[in-house]
Image (tube, rainbow, N blue to C red):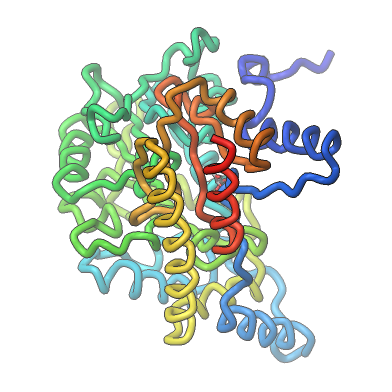
Length: 406
Ligand code: MLT
């Protein structure tokens, strides 16, 4: 008899964004003439930067000629891209990251979901609340939690991010081993200062814990005082893994390219308490289960670091930040408390009512799709998330419709 992994039965019936897509599809079916504006899932709308498109075309041409054709590439990624990332994203900011410590992949979602495989089943895991559901669900699948009761999985430590703590959780009051942090935050849009991040790094060093730092929205940071990588914090290479993505940075949600930094001195421990290199474990996992990102896509990602690429990427992000400002200002004028939307593409809005009712109101009355806050956890109750990923015209139109409807 073929038995299943029963941990899957503990999961809520579907992934948040699949749930929303189903509701929207149903609404559209029942209202075929209504035009819907999607400000829900954080999916980019601007096309790829021209520098990336050109580089991808050239790489495709190389694949058409036997002298330059490429078969399997290195599982960890081509050296040209790893070197560009190490130099531009880390060494230029004083973070001592070597190209060998960078693993190219097809998405931060996959990497943040897969990384937990290299850790013991019995570790104590801390997740933020509200939380990007992937961190939680992948630990449920692995069997690190009990059942889902009253909105939370038994056995996980939830780090509450609320208005009262400025959406930066306090350090856990019971010991934890693995800590997920995401800044600029999805879903709240909150950012973290160097001092606040240093508290977490100190905690991890003192408690032999490890931080999984999701920095997928790093490119949205415009405030020069904010850290752009956790490795700007002293000692962080010993206790932190960082996840980045070209998805939101350069419009790669459909093209797929991301990377994870696992420093060579980043440590975890075996059952005897002996230090083990996490880099070695992740390298083993990655080269066994992953066959690399395609050559044309890695060439396109490399173009992000060219002079033209940098200008074009910045212009795209500025465009979304303009949307974020419009949403934040207009929702604020309607009397809603808003967080995020500055140094972040997400605006976290206190709807002062049940999140799904607010979601339904916006959909039914205004034809706008948002993301209900309680889909991200108990602390999201009463909130919605509006994403800035759409055209300025659609964002203006969406705000006019919301103003009329509410
Ligand atoms: C979101 O809307 O939270 C993101 O698009 C999800 C993701 O990047 O996987």
